[in-house]
Length: 130
Image 1 (tube, rainbow, N blue to C red):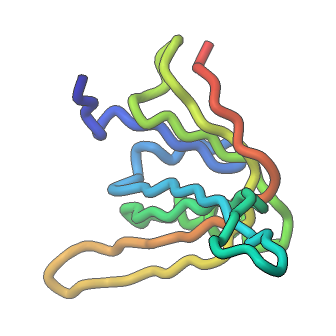
Image 2 (cartoon, rainbow, N blue to C red):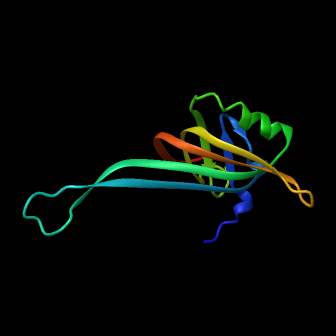
Image 3 (cartoon, rainbow, N blue to C red):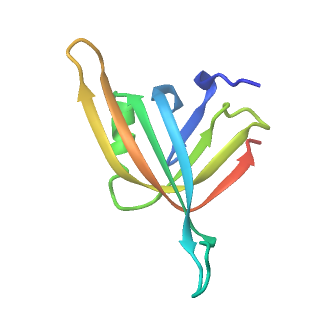
């Protein structure tokens, strides 16, 4: 079943910024470590540390700017991402993250946009909206 991205939900530090988001990317990775001894002919791997990141583009205005700017304080903040929306029963991912970058750009023939990057800290929870 295809899902329309226009219904996606994203909240950062308790502020729903879904209406400002133009795109959002949530990625996760697991680092691996080699474990092998003398005489082994093949590499063996174990799962090591999990990491995650979130990046997005928002239509800039003073409200979303205040939200992003207020998060540059070295504290982790809560985030919730609902790829299909926030209706009861739909999948959501949540966790905490640090804002690692934010950039505002202006185009003389276009609009003002901002991009942001978050580094996930701790575990990610997959659940559903209630």
